[in-house]
Image 1 (tube, helix red, strand yellow):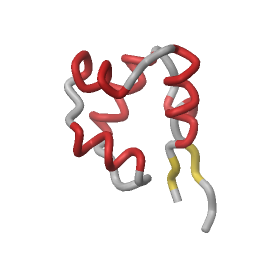
Image 2: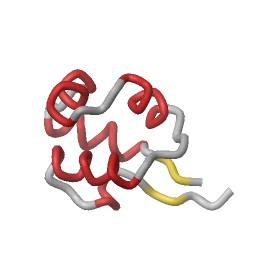
Image 3: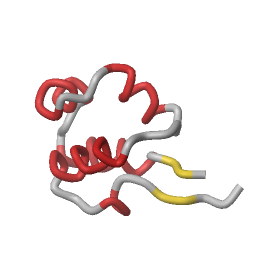
Image 4: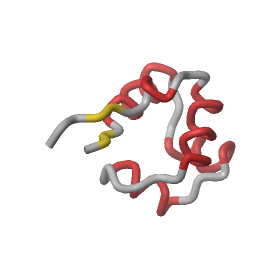
Length: 66
């Protein structure tokens, strides 16, 4: 399973709120909800997150075997 626990940690470290992601990255509240629930996310969304947070994909998500 892919989890986004690292995303919330890096956002906290960088002082980035979900409001900022919605306003500056064009993410909608539905996408934020999907991230919180570890649901499917499009690769273009992952790209936007990495650009906004100036990080690599492995900094915001990880695979945990079920």
